[in-house]
Image (tube, rainbow, N blue to C red):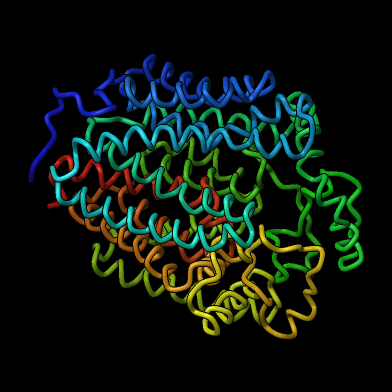
Length: 504
């Protein structure tokens, strides 16, 4: 197995200092990550003509001179960008500018990825067959995504661009993590512990002092901009007619039935969800699940215990189920070994998927109806309609007739299900994309069978579980804080294993 001479400089990306293992260096790296996302958002208030070049230049400089910090910065940008947007939201002109300013984390991600990609393509390609295989497969997935993006772009431009970003983001994060951990002896534990502590503190402040949190962070302005279209399209009025629940403001919109499932309707329990610094309950719950998995299986039990209540109060059943299944998979691995645990947990995931679909059809769950809509349309037209066609972003929810869909057992197009939407938009290419993700999870499990490291085991099964969750949620696969963070953990594991020779 050929390895990289770490005393050389490669392409656009140099070695850079290793701050990751020193406490003060880790603090500096985290501060750098916050500045990378905070400065462009603040600069946007002056003019995007300053903010966009600033994000591009800072990202490329960081990728070039501090590549280890670049990965931390990507994670920070995904977790905290909307917190900075909220702080400046009173200065935004309206919903259109609000949508634009929330795109800087993607600009940062693409800029850093471009530097890493150029370095890999010009200097690294051909040096390690395992890296090349992984990169070729993920590049193949990117090519298929772009093909179906072009088909959808001519039909529904804005949703096509947003779905392109959501589908590509996990792959780009994965490649950055893979290359970083392959090239460098890199420790992420201390920086991620610092980031997790900040995330934890913000969560409890929001939980205990919600109104003060919203006031001091500009949350009232943020949510007014975010929910303006729902009010103008009369979605709240339609929900009031269908459910009898009248929403008078955005805090009422935060209140949902416990775990948002008809199975618990009889309990009449409503909770006010945590939205987190990323300002989205489901994405927030997956971010907490990611930090929880990392903390628990890296031995930070106290942090894990503190994070778990936030996972519950985020009130997203998908992320909670993921954590429970990952915990069970870890026990199975320790009891039965890699091969048997794969079969055991594969059967568990299959039963989870089948049971979820069967029960969902019986109770008229809209996620399952949306999946069945995607599957029905795929069987009728298996070639794919194009990215951006159908799905939550391409559908007018004020025109949906849920009682009719419950009677039919499906929606007319794929919505509310990432897997259903992928089948609807990408046709057979969806199987290749999902197959690549499954294969990466299997490769991580192979590493875990060699190392026996708890975090490696958890990373593999977390990836496989979130793919099944994609049947029941759009956010599971399309939110960067769900699939994006979990697949990045697999990239870290695989990159380090290949560098150390664990993968031939």
